[in-house]
Amino acid sequence: MKYDRLAKSYLGAAAEKYESDRSRLSKWKAEQQVVERLLAGFPRGSTVIDIPVGTGRFIPAYAALGMRATGMDISPDMTAIAARKAEKLGLNMPLHICGIRRIEAISNSFSIGVCICFLNWVDTDGVREALKELVRVTSGHLIVGIRHYAPLEELNFVKLEELGQFFLQMAVRLYKAFNRTGLRVHEKSAIHQIFAEKNLRVVEQVRVVPRKYGTDYYIYMLEKRQ
Ligand SMILES: C[S@@+](CC[C@H](N)C(=O)[O-])C[C@H]1O[C@@H](n2cnc3c(N)ncnc32)[C@H](O)[C@@H]1O
Image (cartoon, rainbow, N blue to C red):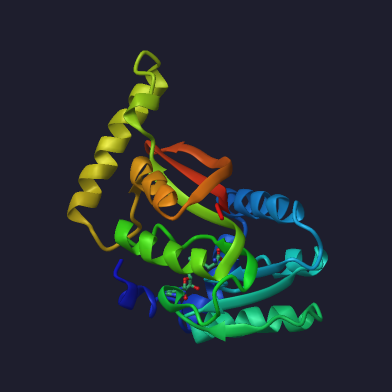
């Protein structure tokens, strides 16, 4: 999806229903667990930028872990829900309406950057733009979620299940070739190339949803090389 259209996709009812529509899904729960575990590895008082913060699904974790978190999102409606959540928990968390391509923060102002459920809404150049800004404002680590096609060399065609994944992936590729408006599935090699360009080292990669339609959904913990 184009950045401009995406910016208008989470307003009104879409924002109100966002979390209730998703919070029971196994993918949501798995993401939640992985991100919370990764955050728990950092010291209390760490500064975090969560962009796009959405409805603030990680706010309870920031509060419990004593983190100094800031949330940003382009949608005023999503940000307002996040603000209500922070207020309920008594968490003093700045929440700003701001686009990821031009984050309103000075360089290296946060130690950790969190970007979940965003990078598959934009194309590969969009990923590059978003990561460029995240890398600029973050001095230490990034936690990002991204789905990519399972590389064919990783599939073992002797196994019936993996052969099935190959055909499913081809079907997804064909579908995506004609429907360029929805979620984008990236090439793993292109994503790792962007990590390398941005001087990001993969510290940990968790395959949160393995081999769905020949794709893998990963949460990466990345470290900014100095
Ligand atoms: C699928 S939600 C993910 C929210 C949250 N990270 C989560 O995991 O629930 C996508 C979010 O991206 C926000 N968004 C869309 N375009 C944006 C942009 N250019 N900059 C910042 N946020 C944007 C939307 O408003 C929405 O809240």
